Image 1 (cartoon, rainbow, N blue to C red):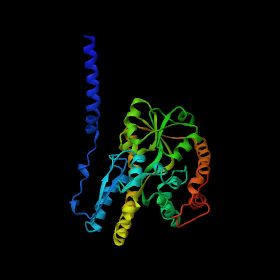
Image 2: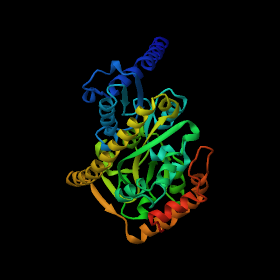
Image 3: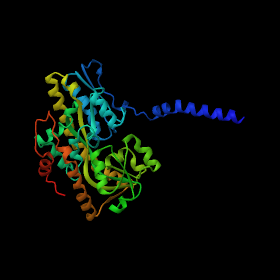
Amino acid sequence: MKERLALLCVLLVGLGLIFCPQAMAQQKAPSLDAWKPKFDPSGAKYKAVVSNVSSPALKGVFAGFAFRDAIWEKSGGQIYIDYKPFSILGGEVEVLNQLQMGAIQGMSVSSVASTNLGPRMGIVNLPFLVNSFEKLDKFIESGNLFEHFLMAMDHQGIMGFDITAYGLYGWATTKPVKTLEDAKKVKFRIAEAAVNNLLYKEWGLTAVVMPWPDVPVALKQGVIEGLDHTATVCSITKKFEDAKYFTKIDYAMGLFIWIFNKKWFGSLPEELQKTFTSTLREVCAQSRKESLAQEDEELEKIKKEGIQVFTLPEADMAILKEKGDAVHKKYAEEINKLYPGDKYRPENYLKEVQVYMGYSK
């Protein structure tokens, strides 16, 4: 009898391994029905599959659908952007590899993950450098400095075009963090990114590197107790259901960098390349304005929902800035590295950006 029960248990476990993951995947698979195009894309001469890790409820993510519709119209139906947000194609590091190989054609990659193929892009993650919507606009309007930034993955066969935003970084936590000492008792999830790793080590905080799709379960199970992220993202993706507190740090902007496979872009006729570039930049500029408004709206919303919002004492913020400056120094070599395709070849790119942005620790 015991042997039969044991055999039955083995069979049930086996069936679970076979069927449960598939069922769970089907259950959790997000639907794009609400964002279907109002045109028939089947006649498009050029198609680009474009990935994003997050939800189009974020203005900086929705920009992909706005671009899809705008480029369809401006290209006369020649270019179709098959946009796939919600991590449908996988985590960002995985998708970056797909993009480099040409398996997909584009991606709006978070700035934190972008350093995996373009270390220079880590400049926008450096603490207290490009840490407001106003500073972001200033950086984008900087001419050679911004164009050099967009060239960060050129040697990997990937082109950068522009930036959209998703708010200012802070800490969403399951327990109140009112001081730096409070923060030292929290396990923070951070992105798979070199700059973030360096920063949390300098700050003396416990960091758990984790792909974004793994966060919901980890937060619910207490594997992590805090998120290094923006209030906008945490609100829209329901993270405040588990994390009831948010500490405004505003040390960096949450950014998506719009990148495309260089070979695919080169397959477009020259006129369509111009149309593609100008249209994407128009969409991104509009999206950044909408993201600024969304940031204010979401902060007010979470306060009304009972989420407590804190700021650190000035003395603690001064410590974060001082320790954060060490990350500028430690990552400078990666940011300043030049590659054969670079048109702008500054001796010290980081220093030029720091001076231009008025950075001081």
